[in-house]
Length: 275
Image (cartoon, rainbow, N blue to C red):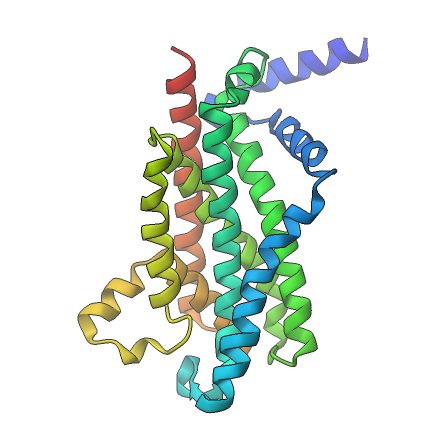
């Protein structure tokens, strides 16, 4: 009786909520991910070490030579304090992109996991939501671990930094949605060169290691249009206490990017597999 009642409630929800808005079975994708990574949990934590190595080598090492740089609002800040929030944003981006591109492509094209899932009552938008949800959980683990390191090194200078982890999840949501949407258009592993072509320049140029003012104005405009720059601005402002309306704009841009990517990914999976 309990199962029948649950099915009835789900059917009612599907009738009352527009098709693109209901994703009640996405948790099944999360459950599968937990079961898969339960025996290889070290793989999850491997993504935490890359930004940590950058922080210790460039942030601390070069920071000894650089001293201070111009931070948000024009105030001088230590180089390591300037770089750390940007590396947190980069970690969120990399974790989300890895899960939503390489892993999704394998499940879509080779493991045929989504074909099997769509043979059940699960829908394409539920698969997309579940995959993005797992990317956020993994990104949240990275963000919390990196924040612990920042606190231990004295790189947090404002109470607003309590919002760093939620905002890192927002960055992950933006890139996970966009990454999964892009993956549905890929036909071979060679196409992942375009992923690296997009993420590596963003990492290098999105004011990760130096202020925006070092660029000529045309390049500044181009950098300001990148989603990672918006994430860096958001986390750096919160960590250093430079809070203003611009941070709300950055958060809104990331939220729109993630929502649009999630919607496109759900439709594309349905188009590809439900022919």
